[in-house]
Amino acid sequence: MLRDAWLVAGRDLRIEARSRVALWQVLPFALLALVLFAFALGPDRATLASAAPGLFWVAVLFSGVLAVHRSVAIESGEGTRDGLRLSGLDPAGIFLGKAAAVALQLAALEVVLWLGMRVLFGVTIRAIWLAVAAAALATIGLAAAGVIYGALSGGLRVRETLLPLLVLPVVAPVLLAASRVWSAAAVGAVGAGESWLRILGPFALVYLAVGVVVYGPLLEAG
Image 1 (tube, rainbow, N blue to C red):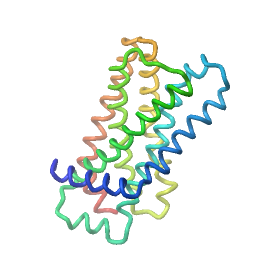
Image 2: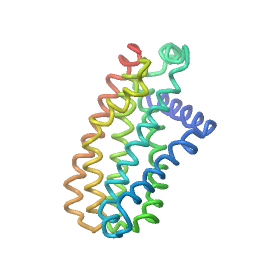
Image 3: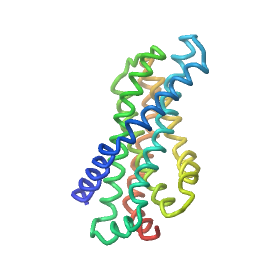
């Protein structure tokens, strides 16, 4: 399973590196969202600083939908899904590989967005380990949930509009919890952040477990 996951993740990342869709579409979209948020909130630095964690994770969430849509599009070519089914790869390995590829892309995006937030909003993080832990768990949860619902909508012609409708309500707890953890990390309130961190861990574990179990049937159904 892990070997198959490594192969699938490497394939997806190589495709993205060659197409540069993440570089020329997803990243500019996320940065533009932050800039528009800054214009909408006005020049008050205190308002920008207080709203920055939530705006950061909204930008990550929308960008994650684009990344998952791209991951689904890789398999949308004629005969591609049939090739996966006939390849002998473990469906759980395929799921883990695709989720890892999406998670790595989101992690790189978050680093760039964090730098943009420092420039635009002037925000600093005091409890860095807390913010990193929240980002890691939230990224894993977003990637796992996105790949599951991407597979669910992958065989449909309306997947471009259906995917956001499926994913966004499901990952609302990630948006809420990650924003609260980052707000607590910004002021050094570790205790408050840890209480919200307990939501992100189970979310990521549940969707990883569900994906390992159901991705095979979803692949067959598609």
